[in-house]
Amino acid sequence: MTEKIHLNAVGMPGYSGSMRGDPMVGDRSAWDAKNYPLLHTNDIDIGINAIHHTLGTGSWVAAPGNHIHILTDLSSGSSLSGQLLTSIGSGSATWLYLHNHSHAGSAAGDGEKINIASLTSETATDDFVLTADGSGSASWQPADSWRVTLVEDTSLNDSDKIFTVPANREWQILWIWVEYTCTITYGARQLEIQLQTSSGNIMGQWQAATPQDQSLMYKYLFGIASQDMTSPRDFYYITTPLPAGTFLSAGQKIRIWDNKAKDPTADDMIIRMQYAQRSV
Image (cartoon, rainbow, N blue to C red; front, side, top):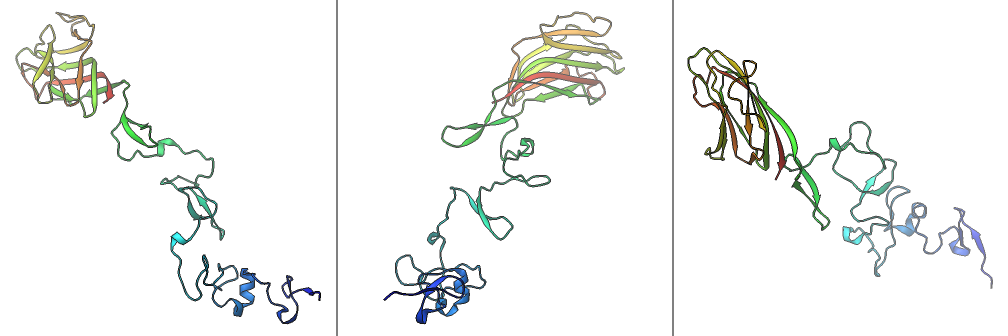
C-alpha cells in the first residue's frame, strides 16, 4: 500500500490519517513548539523565537519538567579561546575579544587605530619599557639608553643647593651654569661643586679658581674640557673644568654652594645643569 504525503497547515510535509496537520517526527522548531504546545509541554518557552530542546531520559537529553543547565553543560559554538559572547545590539550576539580600554568619541571598530599616547602603563617606573620575557608574557624593564636632560633652580635668596639622583637612575654630569649675585654683606664667596654619597659624605669637589667679592655678579661654567680660569673674563665670566667621567648613581647628590656661607639666605644663585641619564 502506498502512503500518501500531503502538506500540512504550515506548508510542511506531513503524514496522512490521524496525523494530518501534525508536525513530522523529530520536528522541534520554535514555530512548531509555538503552534503545537500539547506536543511540547516540557520544552516550550515564551515567544516564537524562544530556545528549546529535545527532552527525554537518554544521554545528552534534557530531563522533562523544570530544570537548569550549568555552564559546563554548554558548548560555545564557533569561537576562539578568550572571546566573550557579546550583544551586538540587534537581538543577536557574537563572539568578540574584549579589552580594558576606552575611546574618545565613537568606539573603535575592526581595524581602527588606537592612539598609543592614550594608553596607561599600569604599575611601571618612569621611562621603563615593556619587554617580552620569551615565554609569552611581558614585563616593564629599565631602558638602557642615555638621554640628555636639563634641570634648573631659579629660586632666589639661597646660595646652597642640592640635586639628588632619583631611584632607578644614573646621571653623567655634562655642564653646570651658575649665575651668582652677592649682597653687600662683607666677605669673599667661594663657589664650589661637591659630589656626595646618599648619606651626604663628600666623594669629590671642585672650586672656581677665583673667589667672588660682595656686591658682585659672576657667571660660572663648570664643564668637561673647560679652561681653568684664574680671573674673570669680561669682568664677570669664569670657567672651571669637570672630569669627563662624572657619574652619579641613584641616591647620590651634587651640591652647588658658597663654601664660605657669607650670606646663604640672601645671596641669589640661579643654576642650570645639563646631564645625561638612563634608567637602571
